[in-house]
Length: 377
Ligand SMILES: *Cc1c(COP(=O)(O)O)cnc(C)c1O
Image 1 (cartoon, rainbow, N blue to C red):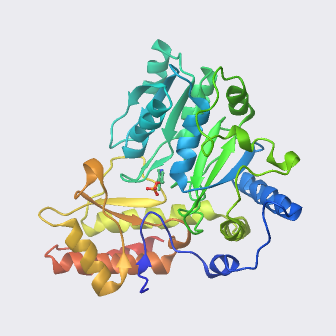
Image 2 (image 1 turned 120 degrees about the vertical axis):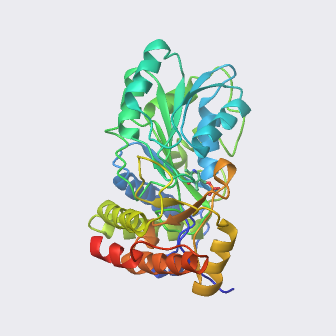
């Protein structure tokens, strides 16, 4: 298979040592007690960069599994759930809530700005009878970063548990699960963590486990049941055979992250330089504030076609960036500078390819994007 340079907001490219560890010889992960220690140690290492003492689990399924599992495990029929929304993934949580019998109530933000904390506080003063709330850390289609620290602390003060989708932020943005009082946070292997797709990471607080145990009705799922994972280590029992090769690769990717001095600072620097290059070059960023450090979302220049731009870039420069879907379809181009993609060489080549491509379709740049990027980075 001919593989392009993937500069999409996930899946990201996978470092060689992670790819090679996926090929290691493996044991029977259900029956070999050593694997229980390997798994537990891996979750502890993840807990380290999530800054949490909460229990962490690695589930066999892409990030969506973690989102559904959180909602399936917490929601009972008739539960009121606050869905904080300023983007596509934010809105999507309501479907999971409904699927498991809950009643979603929206707090809708402006889709071009991060969630306004004062407005949320006013809303909660009028109604805070919610079992839990959902919020997205980085809403990837628009590149919107929400201040989940302020949001989750505020909700906890009101006695509301929180479920945070950090799939495209975990590993690239600051995330302090304990300090921020986050009950459940969900990550994916294939975004900033830069392991192959297929695993979801979930950290679960004591309050969240208690809520699951105090349900009046059983959790209406097995694969999406987080409670069956609570005591796996003492029982030496996994609910299903863990995908051992994927977990060995994830462990290496997590070690790569922990070995780096400051991975958040790297993302921050690359992201600011990318935004500067885009704006000074004469293009427009889609959102107005809340710019994420993991993805930059650019408006498609007037009169141009996103599909044509994307295929021209791939065919002529072997680099792949992304468009978007839903209400953003055809309107934006997305550069994912997360995890293994967030390096000077890869991003500058991507900006070069994007500039040449847009010039081919008639766009006149005000400044050379690569030049600006290299000055700023
Ligand atoms: C990538 C991502 C997911 C997982 O969704 P897929 O489209 O299946 O990869 C969930 N939430 C967010 C915010 C994401 O960026």
